[in-house]
Image 1 (cartoon, rainbow over the protein chains, first blue to last red):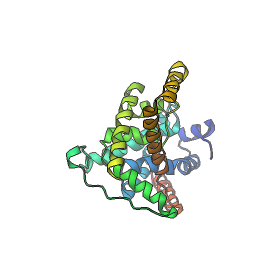
Image 2 (cartoon, rainbow over the protein chains, first blue to last red; image 1 turned 90 degrees about the vertical axis):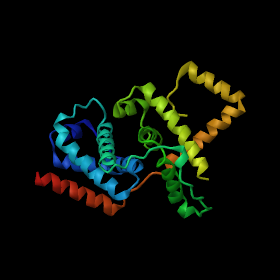
Image 3 (cartoon, rainbow over the protein chains, first blue to last red; image 1 turned 30 degrees about the vertical axis):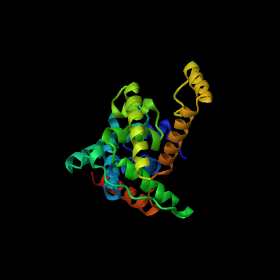
Image 4 (cartoon, rainbow over the protein chains, first blue to last red; image 1 turned 135 degrees about the vertical axis):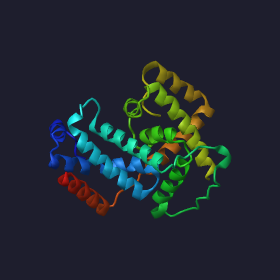
Amino acid sequence: MHLIDKELIEKFKNQDKEAFSEIVEEYSERLYNIIYKMVLNRDDSLDILQNTFLKAFKAAPKFKGESSLYTYLAAIALNEARERFRKEKRFLFFDLDIIDEEKNIPDINEEKEKESVRERVNSALKKLPESFREVLVLKDVDGLSLKEISEIANLSEGGVKTRLHRARMLLKRMLNEGK
Amino acid sequence: MDNELTGKCCEEIEAHLKECPECRGELEKMESILSLCKKSRENLTEEEKKVLKENILNSIEKE
């Protein structure tokens, strides 16, 4: 994996197109993953991903380097995802009384295992409130630290821990109900 | 579980887990859920990556 070094970040701040192209290549799939887990739709995710990079490029001279470049991009991506929810009024309210009946996941062969895991996790994620889903995706799907999540979500580390704990408990319940 | 605890607190939890099958069971359940989350990664196809990069670079050029 190519590491984003200081020189590349300086070039990014100067809106160097070649350097930006490297950054797009490096981070597109990782960002796509967290965006998808938030909006759970392929076309929307690709659109948000593209907007994320365009916004990041426009704002590049303002990047102070206080957080990592990835954290900076992830924060833009999540803002874009939140806006998309608002515009399309697709807030996913959490209400235990109206949980859809989960389909059973049948026994599957090895080739289809990954797809089945994705379906199962995504289906459970869909039922989490947006703020819970966000910390869970950043921590347990993407692997960011509590400190990095606190920067992105604008919460204290303690606040992230509390929300993460609740989100995990809910996810566990949703996955169990989906069996 | 998150590798976020250190020192005495971590040691105390580990000691408790050794003695408490109930908590150990809960931890194992949660670890298997977290493992599912990690395995659920979404991927872009090579074609999608190529188109994305082209679109982004074209938009930047136009500005």
